[in-house]
Length: 159
Image (tube, rainbow, N blue to C red; front, side, top):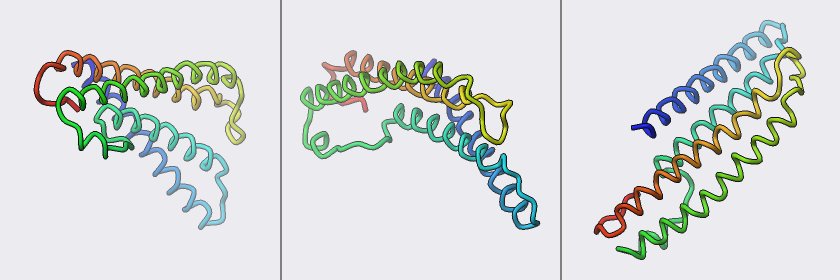
């Protein structure tokens, strides 16, 4: 239940930032067409796109629709397939924990840097998306691993 709730929140945040990206790009095109340059639109579009991609990547990991090589997974069955899923999830857990940990360090390091076009905005608001993505990926991966360990003796594989 918690996982579905977290996924829904991340998906909503991702969609909202994608909407901000789209609207900002439209504003940028219109203002350039009429001869006025809104310099803030480039940064807002870039940073909102970063947020939408990172939130979407985390949700895709939870749904197991992210990039993967599944040639070996498709050939295996039973416990060997479940074991490979657990090994993959363990590797993914290490990677996502590193994203979380180093994302916190980077966010703290760059928190007080400011945007070029909007100096009242801090870069920390952009960088905080990395540990949020990494942390939720850790949660999703742990949930996958727990579910697969619980169902290890059952016949089907939980993807």
